[in-house]
Image 1 (cartoon, rainbow, N blue to C red):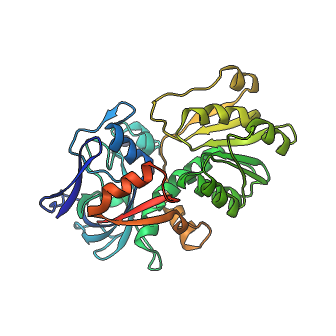
Image 2: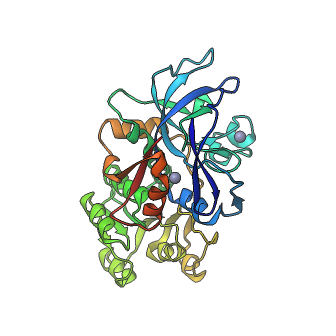
Image 3: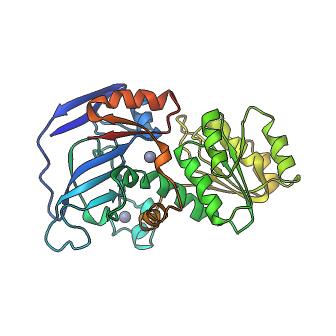
Length: 341
Ligand SMILES: [Zn+2]
Ligand SMILES: [Zn+2]
């Protein structure tokens, strides 16, 4: 089979390797759709995220769907031929965090496309069946892959605990930010402020019901006016950039909440101390997601959330370097590059 391996910064190579034989208890998957994430781009450019370094040659890709090829005896929730969305985080199921229902902070967490676990940019992979979610017949492979970023937005939304008619600001309207804008609308936010430097992304945020703001335009003053001097109840930072963290704390109201979801390449949290302190802000640094796939499937199947407008570009596996360059340069109105192995 073909696999795309990262040999070093900006060095992706298509290699021929044996089709994996499923480990005991695992399913064999034929990968159908993979969307490129900015965390893949971190590895592609720098070879690391935070203190996790890519032990090359690594297969990237963690937002994906697949067709089930074979299942081990005893597995009944999926069968050969099913199209499945795949949870990229492989938690152990046995540590105290897993037992308390928090697999996203599992002590032994592995993650597809993060060392040492190869990701989905290959034709076949062996996987634990409990992380595969069968998709309804009317859902596509690309929609299945996009359930991963939707899950990240959904988990952030869960943590925000916004009450109906409260206000929210989404700082950073990449794919996850735009999904959060859509969630805010269906969940009953009275005002959705979308902060985003790129005009084409602001336009989409507006299409989904947000008031779009350019961070270059005296942002604090505008938000103050829009919220009648009060500030925003919940601010979700989804930019993955240091200035966005500080912005998030400044836009929140006194006693408000800030969720830091983005992963900045500098591996730091940076904000003035007096701003959150004087407001008695509640700041939560978010770890991926948990318990989201079944709900994400319903949101897409029932057309409550539109994921397909995010799939702006399509590539074959042998064109993956192009996809990575496109996403990292924010060229050509890109939101998600979809790669079909
Ligand atoms: Zn991702
Ligand atoms: Zn665990």
